Every structure is written in C-alpha cells, then in structure tokens.
Amino acid sequence: MGNYSISLVNLPLHFLGFVIELWVRSKEIFEKEERSSSKGGLSGKKSNAAFMKPLQPSEALGKVVGTKAIPRTQVVKKLWEYIKKNDLQDKKNRRNINADANLKPIFGKSQFRCSK
Image 1 (cartoon, helix red, strand yellow):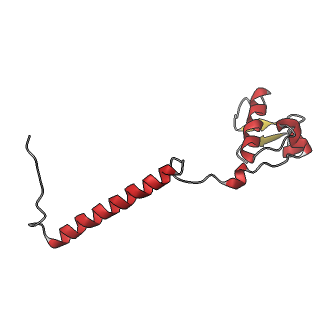
Image 2: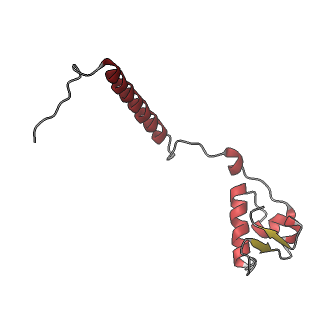
C-alpha cells in the first residue's frame, strides 16, 4: 500500500473553500465536545436545579413518601414504589391507579391516571 496524498493545487477555488470550511467546523465541534466532556456530563447539559431542590412533603404525602425533605424526582420514584408495593394499578387498564386511603387525600379521587 502506498501513501496517498491529495494535491490542493488543482482543485477549484470554491471547492477548496468548502473543504476548509468543513475542516474549521469539524475542529470547532471537536473542541466543543472536549469542553462538554470535561464538565462531567455526557451531553454537557446541567441538570435542572429546581427538580433537585429538596422540598418538604405535605402531611398527606408524607404518609406515602416519608416526612423527610426530598427532591421532586424522588417523590415520584417513591410514589411508584408505593403503588407497586401495594398493587394499586388497575388490573384491566394498567395506566389507571386505584387510590387507597393514603393516596385518596393526595389526588382527590378513588381512581386516577398515572399520566395526569
């Protein structure tokens, strides 16, 4: 196998400009990815601090998720754990949740959809 090289001398000027523009853009993208990977995230995005802020649950919600202040993401996780542990999903339509005595004061209904 021989060494292959491209001579830029014989290329049309507009094509040469296109190649240089691609090279500059790829270099910018590479540098941007390096900066974002050094920040610690996969995509360089920050997590939303509002979701991670610990909040004190109400008395009714505290019966289900605990009385300690926790972030909203953990509230949802603990709600699902409670629903699955107590087998509260409707047997026919799994998107519906049958509220027990602890969930009824929170949602105000005996049955609700988990997407709302």
